[in-house]
Image (tube, rainbow, N blue to C red):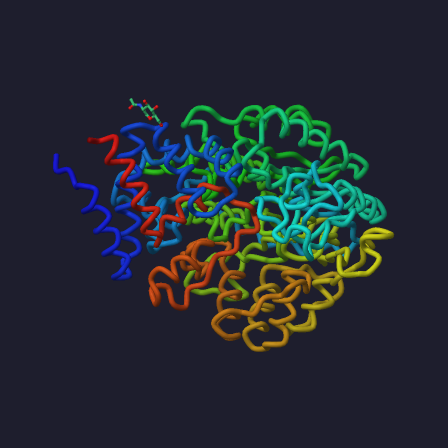
Length: 604
Ligand SMILES: *[C@@H]1O[C@H](CO)[C@@H](O)[C@H](O)[C@H]1NC(C)=O
C-alpha cells in the first residue's frame, strides 16, 4: 500500500487551499480522519477535542460534545468511502465545501394511481382555529442577572462567563433574552396567551431541550420532555412532533437498520402523546418517532413525521451508499396517505425540520416530494418549525414549470418561542371546519424591546395576518372564505419578484423585525434567493450553495481572496459541535498539522 507521509499530506492540503480547491482539501482531510479513526478511535476523539480547544471553543463544551458526538462521527467516517457521493455530503455538512452531488434517481412506488380528485372547495361554514408553536428550548438553568454576552457556549446561566467581566454586560432579565434559551417565565406566559385564543387544538413542532448540547443526558432530557408537556397541558389537545434536540446526543437518530434506535425518546414521547392520539397510534409506529392519528369527531388526520431521519446533522445517516428510506418511514407515510385518500380524509403533515432547507438531504427531500405530489389532493397543508424564523415553502407538481397551476402544497414554517432570531412567537391558523383548508395564518409576538417586557412581563399581541398582509398583493383578489392555497402563495412569490416593498415586508417579518439583516449581494440577489427558497419544498431546488461555517473569518485571514462573496452560515437551529470542530480544519494549517501529526504518531 502506498503510504503518503505526513509532510506530503499537509502540503497537499495547503496546495489545494491555495488553489481554491477546497473540496479536494476536504477530501484529503477526510482521508486523514479516516486513517486516524481506523488506527485508534480514542486517539481520534482526543485529537478532535484538542482541535476544538485550539479553535477557540469553550473547553468544557469541547470535552462534552466530543464525548457525545465524537463516536457517531467516528462511525460515519468508517462508513464513508473516500471520493464517494457520501464523502461530498460529509464535506458539505461539516466543512461547507464541495458542490451538491446529483440526487440518486428513485421512483417511490404507490399502491394506486393518482386520483383525479381536485382540492376540495372550502365549505364556507364558520371557521375554527388551531394554534401552532415551535422550538421552545426551555433552559431550566436560566438565571436572571447572569451574563447575556458570554464566552461560554450558552449564556444566561450561573456558570456563564461574561465577555466583559465587571464591565458593561447586560444582565439577563427575568423573562428571557435574545442571546439565550427560554426561561420558564417566558414559556408559561406564552401558554397563558394561547389559552385565551379559543382554539380547537394545537400543534407543537418540536425542540424542547436547551442548547447545552455538550452536557445533555438521557435522564435529564427525559425529565425535561415530561416537564414541558406537563407545562403545556392546559392547552388541551396537542399534536407534537420530535425535534432534533430531543435526542441525546443532539441529532442522534439512527435508523432501524443501523440498529440502536433512540428508543427511550420515542417511548417518552409516545407515552405523553397517547392521551391525544390514542394508544394504538402511539404504539403502532413508535420505533421511529412518527404517528398518524385522526382528530376526534372529524375527518382530519394528523401525520407526524420524524424528519430528523433526513437531517444532514444526523451523522448516523452517512452510509455508503446511503439508505433509501431510513426506518421505512416514507413507505409508512405512503400507506397512511393511501388510507386517508381511500377514506376521503384530509391530512395535515407535521414535522420539525422543513424538507426544503439546506438542512435536508436532497435525496430524501426528492423522494418525500414525490409522495406529497402524489397525495396533493389529500394533504391540506404541512407545518414545520426548526428555523426559528417565519417562512414558507411550496411544492410543485412540475419542477420545470413552477407556476400557480402547478403549485401543489404549502409548508408553513412557524417562528419560534426561542427569541434568538426574533421576538418570541406563536401562530394561530383559521381553518375551514370541513376541508381543513387554511384560511388565515395570524402570528403573535411578545415584543422584547417593549420597556415593560422585563418588569410587568411579556405582552402577547397580534403581529400580522397573512391574509391581510399578502391577500391584497394578488389578482384575482381572495374572496371571503377562499383558501390560502398553494396557487395563492405562488402568486404571492410572484408579487415579491415584482414589488421590492412587498418582499421587504416578508424579509422583515421573517425575524419579526428584530435585527433584520441586510440582504447580502444586493436586494435583487437576496430577493431571488429567498423566492427560490419559497418555491423549494424540494431541497435540490433551493438555490443554496454550501457555505463555510463560522470559522469563515479565520479562513479569510489565512487565504485572502479564497472565499470572496461567500457568506458565513448562520445556524440558529443549534446544530452540533462536530460541525464547528471539523469546520475549523478548513484553512487553519496549524490545526491540520495537529491532525496529521497525531495520525503519523500512531502509524509509525
Ligand atoms: C490509543 O490512544 C490512546 C490515547 O488516546 C492510548 O492510551 C492507547 O494506548 C492507544 N491504543 C493503541 C492500541 O495504540
